[in-house]
Structures are given as structure tokens and as C-alpha cells.
Image: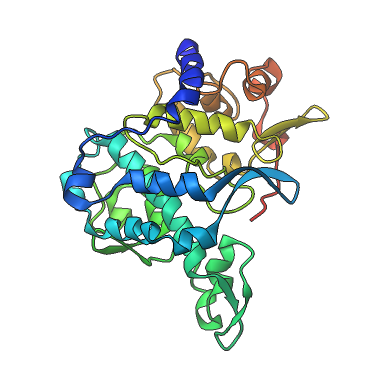
Length: 312
């Protein structure tokens, strides 16, 4: 496993430049072309920026909004027929699709609802965070019953989906909890997704400047989880012998508990399940791996970890 990760690290530098051109049901039948999304990310995502003291990638939302390819990619989701896909056989295709959809739709939400509104529904000021695209970005009558994550405003396959719906499909939720046209339940969810789908906020994992493709998926997911944990301002750090981690690992702890429980002992046993999960994917020479693989932190309890304040 470690050799594979080292090779992935080397190939990742090269592989991130490789964009596969293969025939697929998504492109041929429904016109969902991830190459379009990849080209947009290459053009409008700016790496190595800093906001409020945190290193991150930023997005040129105005440029994205004005580029007709963005709306073309979003519109292509409307024609998808999920009955064409099998939750196990097409697993990588579905994970790549839903991860790309989530990231594109999170941007769409930020672009579509750019204002905080006053009590009369008029644009009062530009939003400062994606969360303002939900409750605070809506008229007063709606904001107490609506949030940005739960708004079913996106047409996917002819039905309305929310960001939560897209994420919950990736997390392996049963179809009964999702829109009625959802694909078959995803076989073996991959919880590296938590470092790969982004919420358009400062403390979220950085938006990857490549589209996800099933042929590159494993490498891409690993690259991004290493990138996120390598960010000492929001991913992982040790300060005065205290372990600091992203609050994502606090919120979604049960996903990692599930992953470890279903792993047939391929993950290390740790008191805090996300640590055992992460050790399987972190590059051996990374600060994050060296930190979490120490006996002290492998046995640390959740209550002893300090989680970064989340900057929306």
C-alpha cells in the first residue's frame, strides 16, 4: 500500500496534466462532458492564494459566470438517466460524476444568489459566504425554513436535487432518502470525498483545478486528501503538542467509523477513526503522516483533539 501511495505521489504530478479522452455513456448519450468542467477549473481557479491568513485556492466567480461553458455543463445534468448506471459496476463513474456535480453546483449556488436581501427582498449587499446563499441570502419569509445545503433547486435528470442530496448519494445513503430518480445505492462509498467536494468557503478543502475522471479517480482522491491535510491552517497541525484538525473530521466522524469497520482490518486501529482512515492514504514522507502515525496521536481520543474554527 505504501509503495502504491509513493508511486501515486510521483504519478500525480504527471497525472494531473493527463486528461483522458474516452467514450462514455455520460458524453455520448447525455452530453455530460467533464472535459468542459476541467477546462473551466484550469482557467478560473487560482492556486496559492491567501485569505484571512489561510492558504487556499480561490475562484474567479465573475469569470465563471460569464463563460457560457459553465451553464452548458450545469444544463447537461438535466438529461442524465440514472437507470443506465449500476451502483457497483459503474462505481468510479458515479463517484466522479457526483463529485464534479457537487463542486459545480456549489459554485452555481454562490453565483445564482449573490446578494443578502433586506426585509423587502431587495439586494442589500453581496454575500460574504456560501451560507448566505441559503437563509441569509433569501427573503425574510424563506430564510428560516431554507438552507443552502437543503434547497432542492438543481435539475438533475429531470428532478430537483439539493447539495445535501448529491453529497448524501456519495456517502452511500439509500435511495429512499434521495430524489426518486437517484441511481442505485453506491457500492462502497469512498470517504476521501470529504477532501474532494468543496463548499466554496475558506475552511473547506481547496477546489481541485482538474475535473474528476473515473480513470484517474483513485489517484485524484488521494492527491487531494494529502493536499488538504498538508494545509496547516485548516487541515492538520500540531501546536504546542496539541493536535489540530479540520472540523470536517468531527462532523463526519461516523463516516470514517463505518469505513474502518467495513475495511476487513486494512485500516489501522485508532481511538479516533478518521486517523486510522487517513493513515491509509497519506504520503509516508508527509508531515501529516509522520504526525498521525506516532503512537501518541494514534491513541489520542476525540476529546483531546482541537478542531479548527470553521471559517465560512
